[in-house]
View (cartoon, rainbow, N blue to C red):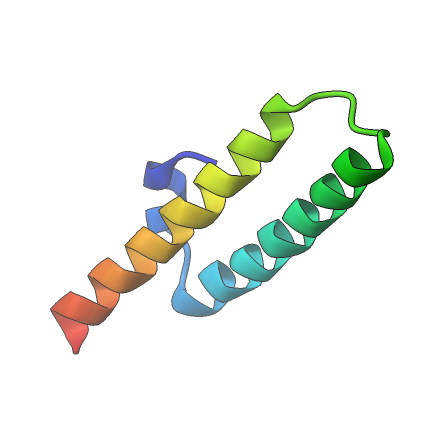
Length: 65
């Protein structure tokens, strides 16, 4: 997802998306460790999505906190 799309989500939806992305990252890392990873680009995409979500959450904390 793009940052623009993530900003439209509520705090609860962002938390849910973050959990899903972290689970996906775990699965990708596991596949990489066992030699079953087909696309290493997916690893980078997932890490960037997690970073985007965390950035948006931090921005919201700074402006609302």
